[in-house]
Image: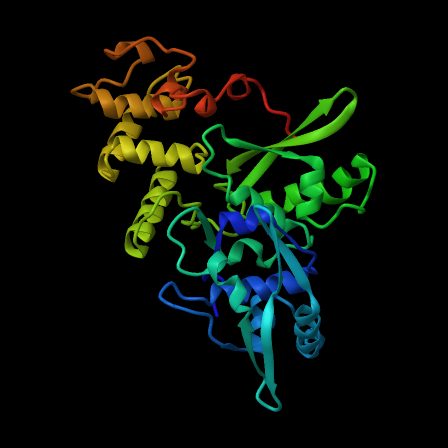
Length: 361
């Protein structure tokens, strides 16, 4: 059992299932999910030491050791729902939990009904390191983290959620009915935890219908510093690929992010990688050139342009000059959107939101 184990779920499962689990129950489920292997054809009983699980959570109070059977017993009772078109599927998380006295071991097995959402996933799934959620204190943090993580690659860089739908996903329809209380007790603590502990963070914009806040816009950002998962290399995967190809792709995206001093989201890193046809050395070379320029408005857009037009560093010892000392087009405010392919269709456009300021709550 390792905090660097990978949790993998289908995006559909994340965005269409409603459940209410305690923080301990969520961490147990996600730890168990991280033990599922890509080559597994079906769920099998997964054994682990209770002491290892307690240590993984960073819990020093050994009283938690005796509480694990209570946690699994409650989990066995909890049924949640997944909506598929006109069908509602009711599923229990676990099919069995077995303890052998005197061994300190527990054997858990997922319900087989969960297989389509957690195993042999080739398209539209999200994966992340277990370390991202282990130290969280709010029961809502892991759930919101997953919702944002599976939307990290959206071309517009944000996700809008109807407030009522978010409450439903969190099973918090009747929790803090006043939005001000919901924001203060749920959203703001989650925002702080994600920024401190995970590989992503978010800014929040409130959308009103009349005078009432009805929708929330989460602007998702890469959290490159000040978190406990600096080596995160797992993101939402769209499109079919083999496990080997998938692993290679996420590793390359992580490498691109590590080159830049600026924070990049997954889409930006992937766009740069695609432009360079996967050649990390070219990305390093062009970033080194761009990083010495003055008055660069868009680093991402300029690096992409530098790769496409093969910018060359000045010869000799001369210091790199201003932006316009290079043979290149004048900066266009929509340059980065065009280079990233965001102007291909109405649905893909960044829109004015991309160029406007972001409210950081």
